[in-house]
Length: 609
Image (cartoon, rainbow, N blue to C red; front, top):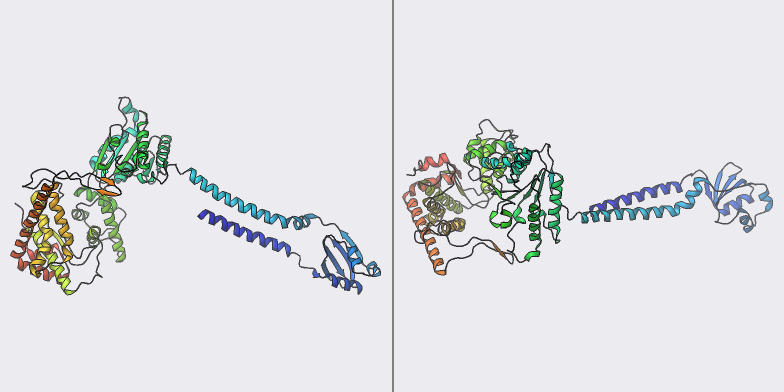
């Protein structure tokens, strides 16, 4: 569409230029004055004409006073016919020098052909531009089945190596074999080793799967073909399979190289799960990927890498030996890895001298690499808004909360009553979390709205944890219910502010019973098959493998966990009622309390035995 508009504009401006030139030619030579035939006859009769030159349809008149005139006669009529028709006296004509010239040269040709040539040229130009637009559309239609993969050539400025990927030590060690094979394939082939055809990168969003794949290509110094799984599937049947074939042809021409398919679960889901049948476009694309991977020769040095955060939905044929048989897991970065990632992303950012990336890493458990990059970017934006030249700890701490919960909403004005309820609610969370020994230390309390929360209590672990006990979960449920309990204890009523806490507490209690087998009554077993099924566009995440009677027992056990947590929370709130009031007073005055201010009121946190 843009090309067509461009061509029409070019044609329009070209028409204006040609018309201007034609008008200039038509209006050339304005020296002689134009005159009519009647004026010419009168001048001849009065003896004012000295010479007449006949040139085509023009009569160039020379007057005795030296002036020049041009008179147009009818086409095909001679000067003699003109004299006869107007009964001009022959004696008057006899004294005039008459000369007849044949019209020739470029003037003749222009005057004869230009009137026909210009419209013809304009029509030809219009047809040419239209055909060019149609041809471009045809070329796009013919290239519809070609791969849209973006190729990153070797030896470029954008080259990424393992030095640019912080953390992920085990993953990098696993992938070094792939790099070595791409560099020295003969070393492995001489020993009869088979090339690993597929490497599947598994990990949560933001853990650096794409970055690590590019680092493998950078270390091996080979071309890198990057395409997303969603780019294969289009509305036309067969396009996905055609693009897969074209992608692997490009890879064989560029070998040795790496093909990277991001979000492969878009085309690699289990076949037969939907209603499309075997002719479904997504399944045809998956079949073609499987066929192409089987078609590699033993000495073909092409590695297919793919990434997904949903390995549970992939088709088993993708994971069998000979295809994506090598799986590399990328975990969330631990404390040391987070510090290393922060150092990588802070290279081009001016940090103040007192900035400690170690402290930032300690306050960001559960953050992925993408989250940490976003944290530093938000801190830089915040520092720029404050007209600072360096990024300080204040901006970094505030950016942590912004990434976790969203920006502050200071414009949300609460009434005095709502402010008091929010202060008691958050003080209840913080107080119960502080006095339960297995809970993480409270870092900050605020009654300023942030994101969708009206207030928040920030508690962070002192070390990375990969396993949690039943006691930790039951204490967490008590902390979640502490705001609800405090509202009811102080005001005798509850508000809708505890809705999210109640939902999370109920979900966690159900998880303890159905997933973790932590119910004393129901025993060490799980309940419900967590399997994804798609039927008429609806995703059903759980299939019951238990009876209605067991379902009633699960509901009863959920109530037991909730009631136990409520009693623990009520006990702490009642026992520390005086401390609660001090905490609420401080929150109403300052709106935000940091860890040091909080512990000055409630004392040091009890140590778990």
